[in-house]
Image (cartoon, rainbow, N blue to C red; front, top):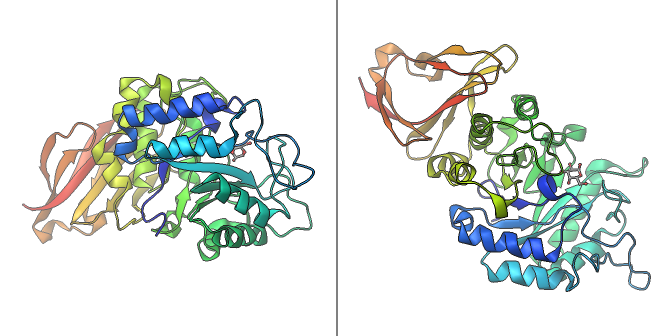
Amino acid sequence: MLSRTPPMGFNTWNTFGENINDEMIRQTADKMVELGLRDAGYEYLVIDDCWSEKERDEATGKIIPDHVKFPNGMKAVSDYVHSKGLKFGMYSCAGVRTCADYPGSFDHEFLDARTFAEYGADFLKYDFCNKPEYADGPLLYKRMSMALKSCGREILFSACNWGCDEVNTWIRSVGAHMYRSTGDINDSFRSVRDLFISQLDHYAYSAPGCFNDIDMLIAGMYAEGNVGAGGCTDTEYKTHFALWCIASSPLMIGCDIRKINDTTLNLLKNKNLIRINQDEEGRPPMIVFNHDEGRRLGLVKVLSDNEFAVMLANLSDSPCGMHMWLEDIGLPAAAGKGLRLKDAFTDEDRGVIKEKLCQEVAPHDCALYLAKLADV
Ligand code: GLA
């Protein structure tokens, strides 16, 4: 089964945009292994838009890789990625042209799926730009899903229609393994906050087999690259990653892994956060409280093995004393039970709390705990 837990990997778009080539893909693959990211679970290396020639091959009708960016063809790149124990991802679009104006798969779905299978692709991100007006959006995702299922290779289907047509209500039925539910992220805390809050009513649709993708990670970009925007602080990246983890969003790294610093690397490899994201039950978080339109959130994700992830997220611009009543997650004072907390970022034991969790949280910061039931 694909997508039993939220897919993890790297995608070229956030940092590289159209500046992609054979060499940087190989270097990225090397680094994913060397830095332990592959072993932490980041297994897909995905090439986003701008990888092909501007027109299809006249004779065969196939999309062909840009001969300057990928002089050895795509199979060679894919073979290299596979030789590193990673999986290989490609990109196309449901419309006639991709978002960056390269050939899209409209009316070529079955041919293109076979082409991706020939490359040895394990993953396809499928975008939504330049759809002919008469074409039905959901039908185009059905078509590519069928094309992938008939191409002779197991390929994870990453649908990317930005939440159009109430995607959460039908995309699982169609056979996709993850689905973008939002517009594009950029490297700013405002974008992180807006994307996360936009899905508060929709996380319950996300589950093993098909996860809600709130877009690729910006952690470690520091304003550089294609979706650079103003950049974030390390505290903001920490909150961003924690939110994506508790929401069971796919975790696709978007910074330049070749230049990643230790702070970002340690965050992205944090075992507790990955455990929260990758929990096999794949449950959506309970929204325990939501104040000021998502600016202050209390979230609890029920995990397997009687564990819980408990989060206080202050997405507002001022410090906040935050309170979560355990009664609101089903633990009234009379139950004689509290929670033993372990700080997910530092691994520190924070003892047992009863009745409520109270904590001052700085702006754009969060507290995240792994918790177990305890007698009080
Ligand atoms: C859309 C997608 C992005 C990226 C670009 C590529 O905007 O949402 O994630 O794939 O297209 O052009």
